[in-house]
Length: 100
Image (cartoon, rainbow, N blue to C red; front, side, top):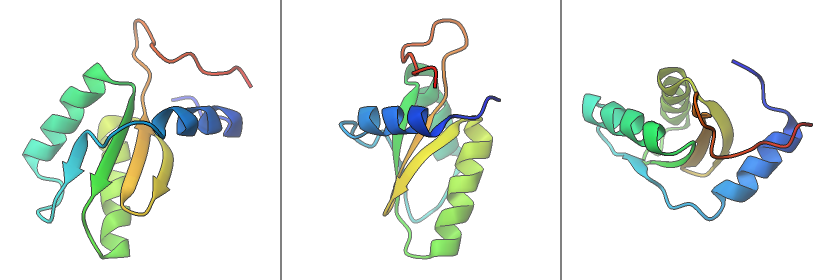
């Protein structure tokens, strides 16, 4: 997996700003149904906003790590309980990243 440059992350953050959270992780954590919803959303959208509802910082970090690993995506940003992730479509990417 390629590493995103700071400029590309900045570009994706600006695109992600207008998004509404598509996947919500509730107090039951990353259940099978949440992971299934995440996978189906990643097949439709390259850039996703995810809301994580937990007060525990360590628990939130574990969820973020698991989401990144499960979806094989890049973490673009985390603000409060909202994270933005990016995974390009293999065939026909919708979002064209700046080169540098």
